[in-house]
Length: 309
Image 1: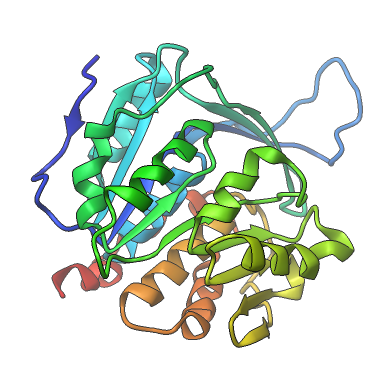
Image 2: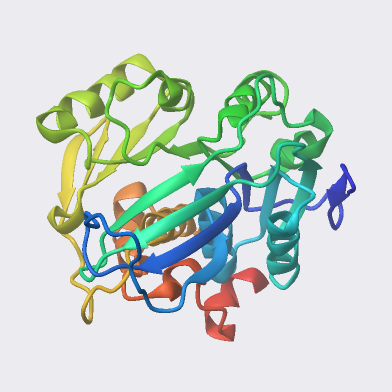
């Protein structure tokens, strides 16, 4: 397996460089969540598809016509080949290095109401790092860098801060997903990014407190917290602002990939000249929660018009 690059031109300027976060999801649609114990449950056909948050953001931004590069570690295994083949059919520029322990995987149990439980196999290895030559040129020139919360991705931040960030360079973002505000795994990402996305799912009454803490303790200019049917909240130097949820056009079948679609829409808005408060509704409008297409963004010609800017 090659440990270098599936790249075009290292001097290309990418709108978004995504660090880490690819894998393969196996989705099973189950009769209820939590799933009651039984020796066997018969389910509809299971689906293998590209998964994990880095994939979702990269594919979502690509579908919107942004120039995207994805950098990650994947295994020399069937799942790694699945990932390579899937991205080979997109406009996403990729750079892979070898993960000896194999490609990350998830098993997703999706209930009738679209909610899901994810069984995530991170395949983490102590001391694992992304080779610097895999990403340095790309992030130096990138208009925006999005860092997935894979463990090795945290070690990219010093380069983003010290070596790879030219004056006037774009923002660095991350998505903490369902952080509880306490887990140390997420803290480096929370305090080292300019724009922080997270979900309120595990925060409860601490939502606003955690948002304020991120803004006060880290380098974040803004925090965007999604809260399901309650919409989302943005906290920045101008104070908090609430955005209502966009009602889905039909029954919710599968929420997988909805958060990544939201992030992609917001990044698209920012990179096409909108303010954050103008971009957030675009993210809400891109959230797709009606089926497996949530992780396979529309690639129609009209959705790619921005690439010809």
